[in-house]
Amino acid sequence: MSWSQDVTIKVEAAFGDDPFTESSWTTIAGDVRGMVTKIGRTQELDQYPATRATFTISNTSADFDTLNTAGAYWPDVKLGVPLRVQGIHSGTTYAMWYGYVDSLPQMWRGKSDATVKLSATQGSGFLASAKTSVTRSAEGSGARVAALLDTVSWSTLRDLDAGLSTLAASTYIGVPVLSAIRKAAEGESGLFRVGPSGRAEFRDRYDRIDNWTTSAVTFGDSSTEAPYFDVKFGYDGRQVWNQVEVTRSGSTNTQTATSTGSEDTYRTRTLTKFDVPVGTDNEAEGVAQWLLESYREPVVRVQKLVIRPEKAPSTLYPEILGLVLDERVTVNRRAAGDDISEQFHVEGVTHTLTPDRWTTNLLLSPASTATYWVLGVSTLGSGTRLAPY
Image 1: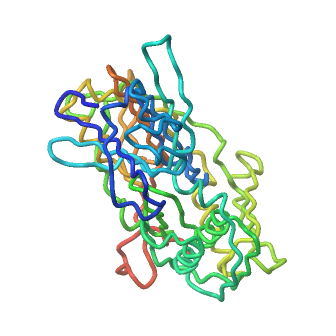
Image 2 (image 1 turned 180 degrees about the horizontal axis):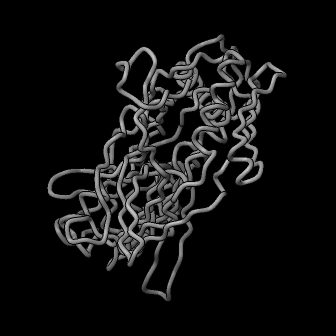
């Protein structure tokens, strides 16, 4: 699949390879008529789901017919085949999506046309269905995530921070691996996901503070900014929490952080976290304070940002292909007496490609404009707010 300005989409399958050990890739892009890829999450307090991609594939050759023993890919046209999507612009290759085939329904239109509506799911879908039984002693959050991945032989394709929290000893008996990893990430106040290159990614709670402080691109409506097709701003109380309750694993003591000022204005809105695997009640209190500080007041949010890269191909194709989850961007909107300019983090990216149109939808969350002071790292006087516990 190709677009203007030398944009090429590579869709490849690793026929015959096992998950997590892919080495041999076959290009199937010439058969792809359209696709939708999704990565990330909707909002910053959501867990990262196992996102899916769908492909409309020409099957007039019957190569994607699972019963066709004469097909080019037989006998490896089956569920679980690794699949990856890459975008190439001006000689640079960008990872767009990576997952595993989970459905291959065939469709016919008359006697002359045949297609397959292939769908695939990220590797975290495998982690959700696989269960583990293991006992771990107290250890760092990153080490816990790594150990849980090891129980299902996910030893490569991963990019894990060491983490800052020490998690309490835990025994897992028949627990879904993804659930156990998400609990470990919650104890860190970090995040876990599978990225567009197929790697399992674990980020500690300072990641955005340390690494995503500068806006990479400005989307706006002036001639000097990357243009968007549509934008919608919102301002509501759906992510306002002025009472946060956190209970750590193995403790009956609930740590509560409260903002009476926010309660007076917006009424009490309670966020509750149970069985958080931190080592002490003090750390549980730190989790509660961090969440309260982040969500006690409503903020302006972008509910929709739609980009049509063909409107400014030389500018927009490298921007949308180069955007990564967590990256900081600026969105400007100028209207009579109501100019808006805010910074956001990228939470999710959806690309919808047809033969005549490419549409990108960005899901964003508000980015803090504060400068943080990190104990043991920052120079005294270099920040205005203390970083989370």
